[in-house]
Image (tube, rainbow, N blue to C red; front, side, top):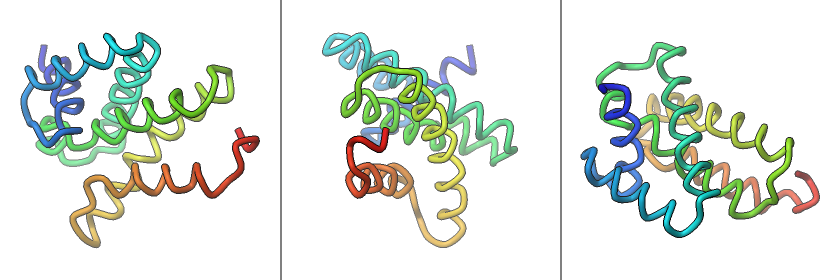
Length: 132
């Protein structure tokens, strides 16, 4: 149950809500809009949260969803801008992991919360669409 709460907090943190019910409502709303984006948000959050556990980042920050929300945004962005393919699924996987690593690195320099997602989003627009 704690792991599910961590995932829901990660989704809730997209709107600065450290609350499992807010995360659940956001996830329901995303699924209502698009089942594909709902799955992408869920998988992105799971991948980035697991990455934070594997890399042994601070447990309290993981529990509060601070490593999950960039994965949520990354998952949604990948399938919002690109068709589903093996390459884009890999991009979601890699992007969710990298958003966790980049955020941890940037937090050592300054409060970085959304920076890792924003850098990934900007890189998406710097490279041509045919890149993926």
